[in-house]
Length: 88
Image (cartoon, rainbow, N blue to C red; front, side):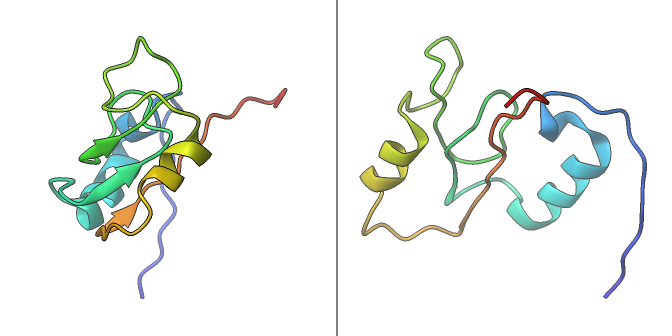
């Protein structure tokens, strides 16, 4: 196992931060079969959800409802990057 520490400028759109994007791309690839219940913008997942109806995602549901609607389906993986702020 190789572990390294890399600093990068933070961004509220997590998947645009270069080292994070590189890591996610390594495992998610083209996103086929991956889900993202908190997609926001720039999600690499094929099946995306975000509560904000103004974002370009497939679903606009509460994350819990979105995940329940997928029960019984088989996926390659899920990306969990929920919204965060110091006041939440």
